[in-house]
Image 1 (cartoon, one colour):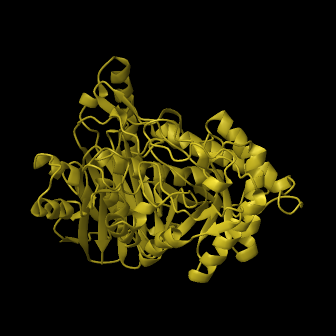
Image 2 (cartoon, rainbow, N blue to C red; image 1 turned 120 degrees about the vertical axis):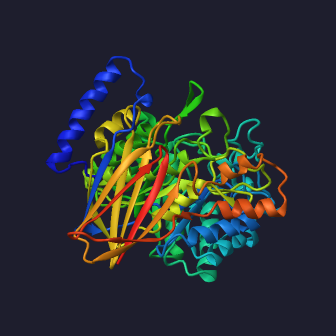
Image 3 (cartoon, one colour; image 1 turned 120 degrees about the horizontal axis):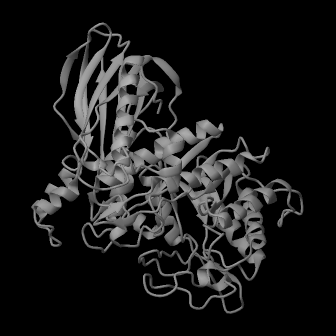
Length: 561
């Protein structure tokens, strides 16, 4: 988000910032100050190159929800977001069980053993998962894991009962026989290759092996990676394979694990082939934020999330072998547990979740450009939970078939296409400040613009870590070099009063037993809302618009000619 403005606006902005910080130092409460107007200039004629989406990746712990009715509905909605392909990543694809689900649990019973120790493969449930993805035209990011009970070196106890007890049970251990593990992966990939067109799929090994998701050493993980990658490539020689899906590298332990993995893939002895190095088509790790509940409200921490992005990019770029390798942020979220509740997670049902997604994605783009790196995808670790109360407080995209406000931000993101257009924005905070200190002083007003043919799309948001009510920000938006005498204006919003099913649910009394009429009402309220379409004159090749943008709000301005 370019912050430079023409001189007449820049001088005003700098003078106001001086007043603001003087008041802050003097002990005034900044949230009580009137919102400072923001000017945003978009030059339709100045392209910054093709706009490449990175938002189109999603995931969840619970694979069996993909073929539940609400899960299938949501998969189709994700696929419909944009012409670009949507990818889906899930845990527990090889976990032993009968296919039942619970929080942070899923199972497929893909592998068991006969009395003589011979393998018994059963793809019935994994086929249901991949069939659901295929029916929705969603591409798998196949996470090969976790350890079947019959192969685990420590199988008992096996199934956990989160949130009670230890979640890292028998599924999280290394295989007792790597040859049997290799044979399982080979047989499974052969079956998938026969049943589906896997040409656009992505493949990876395990999840977060730097914490107790993996009860083995880093070296044992490297061996698991080598053996699994070799098994995949034996059936699909052109398969794109990556890893290690480690946790946020702002943490020194996680950073060390990522470094040793990259070193192994570059120079280590391959545990499957005995040769040097291992295939690595993309590199993955997990940046997470850290919200708190402070003085009666949620305080996000987008800076913590971005610091993990930044350090991860720095680590990858330090290896000449991997500097040009695409990066997938395999779970990039405001915090680390979709199935956990708590006051600090009170942002999830309302608009703050959506605006934080817009903020994190835009700043992630900037960090990638700053470091000269390629981020291929950012996985939002959120889907839906079956058999849970309405608006239960989980990190999810929908609740009992009703879309949450955050999904409408993805709908707006899906409408950005074509070339990225230059934006000058007086309300954008410096990138280094947001990374170092998050957004705790003035708000961060974000803006991204794209142009495709005769259409300009400008996405704007008003983000702050603190979820407290304040006055909306006046926005003066000017689009220059518009090649027409008039434009058709469309205005789409997500905020406390728009595209917000949670607000509507609360207005009707927060019922847990909904009538069919209420269910329909809430489903309709969960759609992306449009203001009435209007026509605006183009004066001197420019369109000027004045409106307000609420705190924790996102809007999309569409100009068509």
